[in-house]
Image 1 (tube, helix red, strand yellow):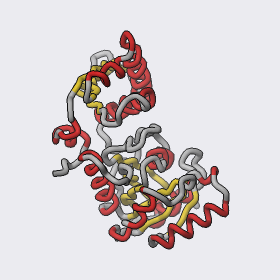
Image 2: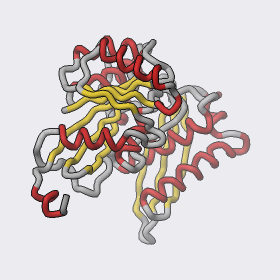
Image 3: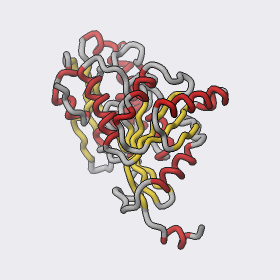
Length: 305
């Protein structure tokens, strides 16, 4: 199709929510579909806490992907806030992508999620992820089982990590979303404020280095962001933990651990900003921060009663 033909076609736009059990690969998939890192990825479950939007332009469509927290059986206040946010993101979208880890199959949190999909009235599309690791007959059986449990418009078999099958998903969405103007400039990749993205990057490095030792309740906030006259930026962040013993873990012997976390976060942030970054990290103990409404507002979550 010529450029003239393409420009004559009506534009399409819409919000596409991605839901799934923890560690199904939602954040990896959003990054793959957007073509840039907009959501952090770690081995730790429930890494995504608030809604993260990644923006992809495909043909004449602007697709706003909504990466939601993993859906699981909540045990704590923070868990309830995240699960509520995930279902809320699905109900506010134009299309819902339901991601299933094909290696794990339909059990546990994934099975419970499928059972609750009837509450979501939006069109739903099934994505079976990690298909490169599963035999074809197993994939076909999983697809059949999932389609028996819920009503899906389409089923795609993909690999979020390699990108296999992702172009087909983009093609489908680009022709299915409603006609309308774009919501964001065509060069914007996310609506996440840079201060919050910087905090998320540091939290990712924290989890990647200490996911065995550090509880997932740790939290990072960007306190100050100062543009310097020389074109660099100074960023001050606080890592909140709940106990003194956790603070010692984050600091490490002679401060080696927090120094390494800071170096990794600074390098990635500098690459994103394309400018020199001076990153300063501090660790503070704040007991039971998971019950503090202010922390929920910082994360973009509603504080559950």
